[in-house]
Length: 247
Image 1: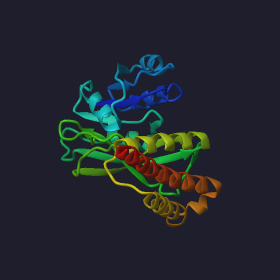
Image 2 (image 1 turned 135 degrees about the horizontal axis):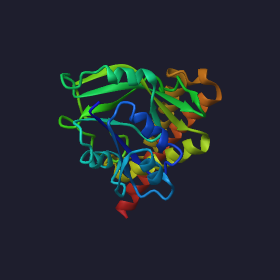
Image 3 (image 1 turned 120 degrees about the vertical axis):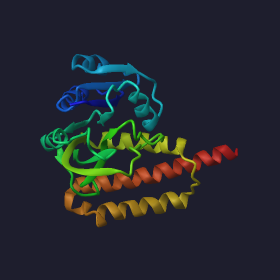
Image 4 (image 1 turned 90 degrees about the horizontal axis):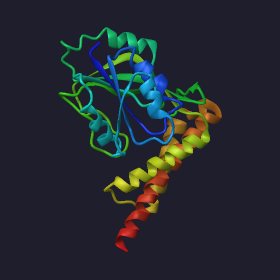
């Protein structure tokens, strides 16, 4: 099929081979944009058949948009390094007539895993994610974190992306710390200790009670508390940044 696979990486040697191989099941090329990894990510990606280009990290959206210039096809399928296509997603994509479709982008359902267990609570499923799109008609939002494909002309597919997000609590905490820092550095919002606390409290209530995290045992509690901590830290870091700017 005339689809370009696109992945951005930094130190993903444990994930990148399986990701590239998964993309080649529906793509005729895979492009990897690497932020100067210090492990074997680049070497492994090349051995798996990907075209690798180096670029210091520009932010989530800008980095992915930077990679589009190296994709030869109009249609692009973007995965993170820790994501794979499930068999039903491969079938859905192969059945599409991308030359005649009126849609600019397609969404797939994502199964998020913690310690290899599929987590269905805490808002982790169903998690629709927009990953297949026509780069001549739409691109990624130009934001530093949690970018998405900017298109309103979309179609939801029934296939799944497998997301092996976290192997342990340490990885979850580390990513939350990284994301909260990026948010604080890039946000133009105002913040306060009360805003940090109230938003974090609501985040826990939503994840653990409204989205039934209590049904997932300790994993649901861990995810709910971690998400709440992430919300608290991103707003409190932003508050500290505003104080520093005022001198």
